[in-house]
Length: 159
Picture 1 (cartoon, rainbow, N blue to C red):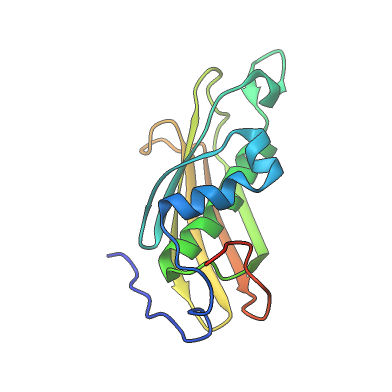
Picture 2: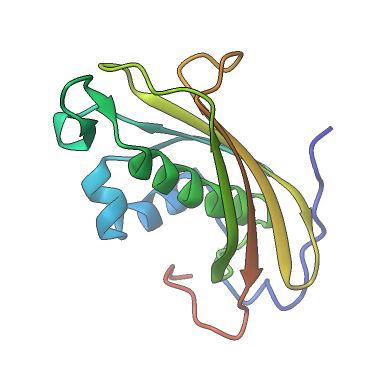
């Protein structure tokens, strides 16, 4: 069952988010743009993205496998998107902790899909879980992420 979040008054001063506004935010982040990460879906506390396979992302030229750092970036970023989507507002945040467990290498030539879900949120802390995969039943990596909400900062999205 998906988490339902009651918006807090301190979050409501920030722009409301939807898939389009979150993709615009993604497109404003240079390293996300450079990696080519695309949001596929946002639905409440769940977000899904694609990291397109590209030669520039290969970590091991002998095997053609995408570098784990690119997948970690995809996961970290998507966890923030799931948090924003789940709370409904573009509240600034910072990663407190990110743990990624790689289960196997990505398959050369295939895009990596990631799915993140906001699991719990307090006044200041958000807890998100994620996975990266080609086939959702056979993940490449599993992750858990913790974010600190920073409502005292200004949002990079415009109202």
